[in-house]
Length: 445
Image 1 (cartoon, rainbow, N blue to C red):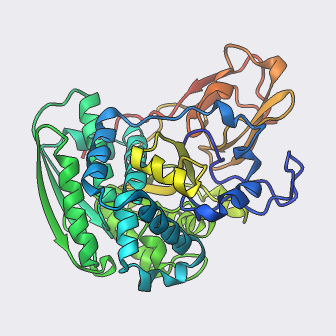
Image 2: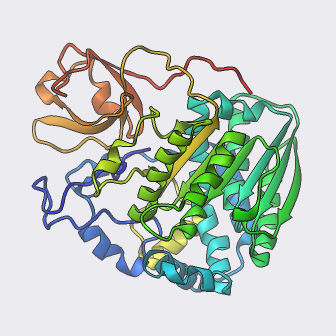
């Protein structure tokens, strides 16, 4: 996570923490209908408006190799005039946020494919690269993937290829970062029911792979419903913005939970969903159900295997808000439609088979799930602790020292330790705040 909207945290309606009007809800998704952007901002969380440090946000840039992949795909897919594409984007945004019941019937429409391929692919691919980077920092099951001579990836509900393009971009960036130059074979097994989307998928992933030296690409596409598909042995299972289309109520049905459990027990798995309250809270419930079923553990974003503490508060949902540099085409369309929020907003859940590895510290680690809150005379941040507690911690300005300044300076989503950990959540001037997030080395699969 980066600076911006808090991760799953929003004040109650009418909260007295700087709202000009009572809070209705945090703006619900990264696909906000552009015509409603201003209205959504008026009733958005105070964490993302003036007075809360928004101007000081730092965009986390994708590694150059990952961005190069995505730019190549954007260039290959560019076929529609900007204003026509902008209309398609507005229509699809409206479909996702206010007319979700029409998704099954309208997904085959040409506007849907145009918007997904020429705009949303470049917006969604970075989410995969971002999430995989976090997973690789937390789990050997993900970290070893760039070292393999052959990487077998199953992409469920593959769509036009955003998820696989994001994976190729991440793999390219990790190999560049680690100076891995040996050849690699990427075997992509895509499951996508729609034939037009499947054709777009193949073109997109080929364009992405063409930018990576030493890559051999093998593609298998099956036109099937992923609910009736058992993935073959693979090294990674990916599923982006597909589970939410199965959601009928507040939580996923038991069949969906069992389906994801099969994926999780068989291979490292990454599920990405829209940052909607409804879909994210359903993902949080699914996370708890997977822990209860066993056979796999949570890699990210959680620090623990205990019940999700955010589920206790109906107004909370655990999601990402990452500021990234938009591609030129995305920036141009955003300008036309008037979209003012450049952040990538999404929720995700990553798992790996087996039991969770031990942490590398005896201290209670804390995940910073908000930016620094603009409280007078102090810095406050909501933290999700490795012992399963959700707490609001504070550091007084007059008690800020070189030893505890990390609490102020760390990015949203960073993991830190506070020694000693205060019982009253007020960090002492003598406390030592350090980055955490390391695991004891686990056996690489």
